[in-house]
Image (cartoon, rainbow, N blue to C red; front, side, top):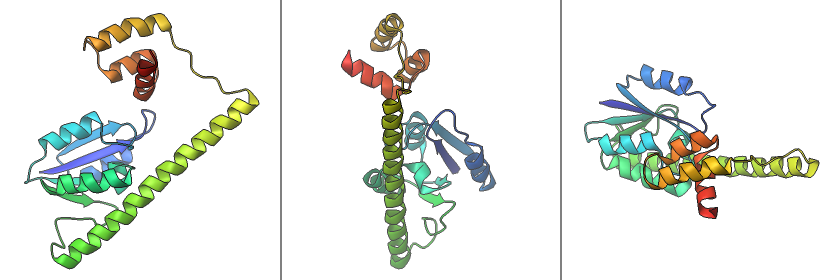
Length: 188
């Protein structure tokens, strides 16, 4: 089966472009996540990995949609290709359904390493730009840390600890990201 995976970094971003290219490639099932590519702790991604079989071909629009961490991308690529084939639509050299000879594998491995490196460098640049922007906003006195409703947090924290709600549901109810919730939980 042709399976697609699409990812954007935030809920505000749109998956349509990726879904269109995956549909045009003939994907019968498409998994989508709207969260950072810094790691692979994404619900739809984990569901896809648990369901993928040796008869499947995984399609992704570009390597940075898989992830943004060099070592993790390389490791995850190996994990997937032990089970199934992968096709990266915007980079034909990253297609494990063809070029099975040693030279083809060597070229694909080189391209994968280069693109994984570029994906992580871009993530680092994004983080640096964000930090610089926050520092400037703080210096101008226009940056305000989001205030949370402490009482609501305490109530939802109990539900979360009793597994009545997920981390994402907790975050959505508070109007913050999951990362912020986990940071607040550590501080609590």
